[in-house]
Every structure is written in structure tokens, then in C-alpha cells.
Image (cartoon, rainbow, N blue to C red):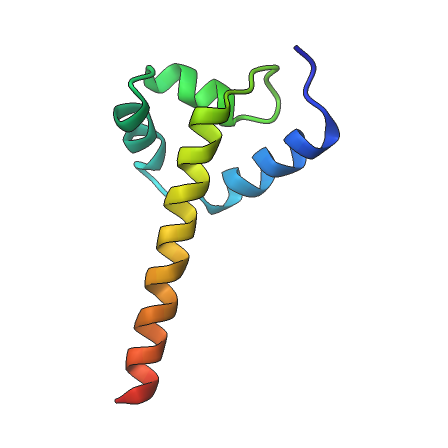
Length: 77
């Protein structure tokens, strides 16, 4: 399956924001193998899985929300 431009850009954005261990966590949460998760999240491969991408976006979003809360608590102190 060929990835469209939007999917490739999304995967590049996700790849730049994931940290060490995130792909393993995604594999555990989605019950896919770590290798498959790695292949799906690599824009150079022709794999795409909505479940894996959604979980990656969720992890990144939660991290950003926690960062914003921390910044607000530091500013309030």
C-alpha cells in the first residue's frame, strides 16, 4: 500500500516526537510486535496502521499536556 503525502508527513512528525521506549510501549498497548510498530511508524516503509498511529499521537498528546501543566505550576510558584 502506498502512503499518501498526508500519512508520510504525519509519520515524520510522530517520529520526531517519540522518545526512547515509546515504540515498545505502543507495542505493548496495541498487542503488535515491536518490529511491526517500528515499521508502521517509519515513513520509509509502506505500512500504515491507524491503531498504532492513534496510540503514538495519544502518547505525544499526553506528554504535551503534562508539560503544559508543569509549566503552569512553575509559573504559579
